Length: 128
Image (cartoon, rainbow, N blue to C red):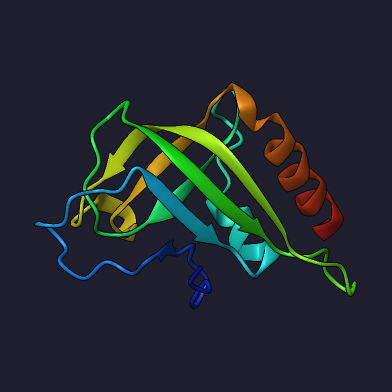
């Protein structure tokens, strides 16, 4: 899994052929910084979700298998945790989106995402 760079979430493997690459059915996301997780988490989606920047193309409502590695709690020697779950593409952000947001995809956790949502909310609560 690739590390998260400079305040963003990242996909693995990196996007090489931005518009011609066929999207995989598997997305791997590694988030090392809890503050990055805070920016990428989508709590307003019914079951939660993540915004994942990248140039790969996906279709709305496309189902994907998602591997997400979350950061350890700040100030602890805890281990990072990895969650495997299904997700659905909820929205697409094009390359020239308003507000300076980069290109990416909003992923809505499927019904099996309750564990990761609880883990994310616990991490974010610890930041307060």
